Image (cartoon, rainbow, N blue to C red; front, top):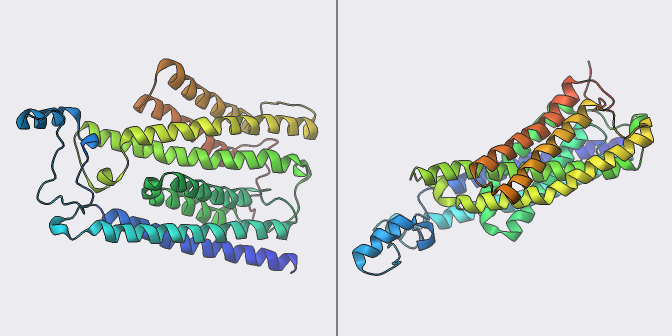
Length: 337
């Protein structure tokens, strides 16, 4: 096939992936909506200790389990109708569609690379579609390891669709050669590490926001459909921490690789370019986050706020620096009139 044909195929695959992921988002939303009354029967572990103590005092049995009420059957549905089974079917459909969307999106990234005859992340459009593919892949891996995280699907697919929508409407440029500064093998190494970092940072950010919501609901004794179906706040916080702990060395490597590339391209390792500066700011914030959790015992809300600050610096580095700042990294490939 010709390079133009590969480019057209890439565009078609990306748009197809967006359509499939939109259906996946609707299916995940249906899972949350129709499962909102389900799974209200709580295990002993999910019941506050004070409530268990009161029940135990009333029954004379220490640590007795709290029985489900008349409308809290084993299926989690009034009258045993079991809306959770229907909700689970929606979730399974959403997950299957997400897998299909990921296949289409990865194929779109690969054909974009074939059209450009290089690694497909030489401008903001390509960086965006590749980052979206990695984010969906990270979510699927997380679900494979912890099936309960499937419920996060709508919160992952929605930002992916927003990222892809921005890419195809605002950031899109035709496939073409790289600017001279990017013609290096370090493009594959440095930018690939940055893409992986961005995807994992985003997934950790989703978990952190949901943790803050779930923690608030638990502390105020409030219950709703989303709160009943999400994992406990402690689990959300722990999973987010593990993701940030995993990605921090990857982001460190991305910065170091970028410094080596800068020395090869511009004759210096560090020049306080806006993108370099904000990359360092992100590193410092997450270094503080991990250090505080490891030494000062910071957990929960304080640590979550620090993590979200770090994520916001990463997002600003990607969008704000590329769009509003000028510097040696100002070659994001934004379309011009």
